[in-house]
Amino acid sequence: MFEEQKREIIEDGILLDKYELVSLTCGNLAIRMPTGEILITPSGLAYDKMVEDDIIVCDIDGNIIEGDKKPSSDTPAILYIFKNRPDINGVIHTHQPYATAISLIPGLTEFRVCYTGMANACCGNVPIAPPSPAGSVEMGYDVINYCKTARAVILGNHGVMTIGPTLKDALYAAVYLEETAKGYLAARACCPDGKTNELTDEQIDQMVEVFKYYGQGTPTIPTDLVKKIR
Image (cartoon, helix red, strand yellow):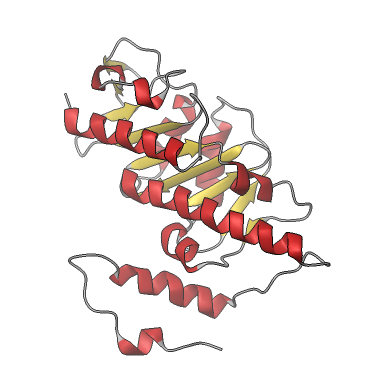
């Protein structure tokens, strides 16, 4: 059942490890099928050791349909997200170190876009939520409460949750958020007062809009849309 999507989950899990967004067995991935079933990674298994039969298939209430492994400990949070965001079909949780480190900076309630990749993949600034216990439904609450338009939320002192219409969208959000966090923290370390150059809200909105024309099967970017904003 859903062998292609199970392989996608495993392959994307291996990519999370490749891009150093997870270590060993931490984090999880989930897909909602068009027919309503939820595919979730098992608890405590390394992604490069997983096979299709390890992926759990359950319904929206968590009842197991297929699989003999224990599902991710974050399943309650994942199901809460799917129940409350019908537009979301892919969810990823990571412990990516650089983006998580952003939450350790006192006074920050959001991580503002400073790279184009983050604007594109995360759909704008990324909110920072207070710490929530691992394995609790609170992580799902944070996604619903904080991700109004953004595709990511940084969980204070914990990790990151990313979401999207597809699992690929959630993966891109996680990867580009981490790339941006690395650059931001490097720049901040070089600034005596800790302040870095920022983009304006108008510039960020422009970047988000431009990404709608990215990839195959989309129209050409309108010339007026890519005029430099000073």
